[in-house]
Length: 133
Image 1 (tube, helix red, strand yellow):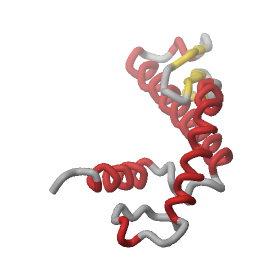
Image 2 (cartoon, rainbow, N blue to C red):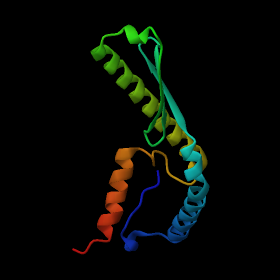
Image 3 (spheres, rainbow, N blue to C red):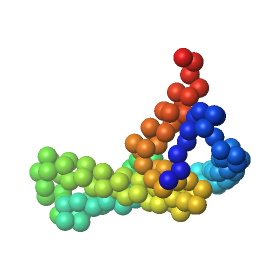
Image 4 (cartoon, one colour):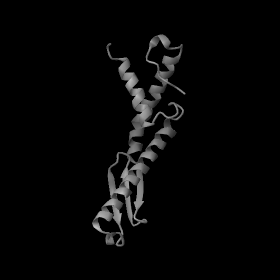
């Protein structure tokens, strides 16, 4: 697995060039990739399919559809089912966007690069490497 070592004394010949090539490929994809990510739509359902929601990769809800049968639910149950469908749609959109980026940059980035915890930890190490003691 690829890992970043911020200490230049530990760098091997060619690593900096490889990292620069990876960064260039990532930046090139980001120019078009941002538009691709804007088209990602997730879908979620709840209430035995009586409530359907679509959401974007950024989490914005685009559409909520309720059947007449869903409207027979009491207000608390209806709210819970709508929220469940929204969360499912947002999760689906997130999964699809991760898949899109992984497919596009899989050969450039290390496995697990888009895991939020791993990404946050790696970015933290990079930022700390530039801080003064």
